[in-house]
Image 1 (cartoon, rainbow, N blue to C red):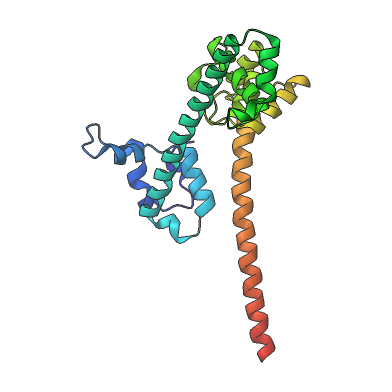
Image 2: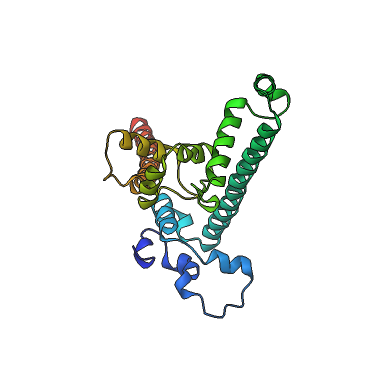
Length: 232
């Protein structure tokens, strides 16, 4: 879907400076502003769906705040992905230092006296680091959530290939989408586009929220009308 057709419900005036296609080849604006002009069609669709009919839909300044916040959060999310990978690598190095089974068991039984998370969580970090360092998963394609990355790490090499083909291996992949994919593999269902289903689910949730807000507004107005009628 083109960016032009993804603006339904949001003012063209509010978004005209946010379209990457409209940025000059030699853009002299600050780097922060140039980055804000690179807006995906999916992001514009989400803004359109969530804020259609509100004042914000026509407010370019506040739309920019949304986009800037999204960019900052996504950057932090990527740093989080690198952090849990580094933790996993450090724990795998530690495991290589602990030679005996007794030493390893003692550390596991007292794990939270040394580290700010549980041994089961540490096990997931170790698994993720192992799969990345073995070459099965690329570091840049890790989801921002360690729980999602762990679900990816449980896939066999041939299952990972299928997941990649379906767009399920990337920074924005959700844990629920990978779990659904793993279940489908067990049932030999390979034709379902789980990435598309995940995107559709997010849009439907936004639509549901908007409809609930409208329903609340309708009920409030009906009460006001009924109060006025009762006074007469």
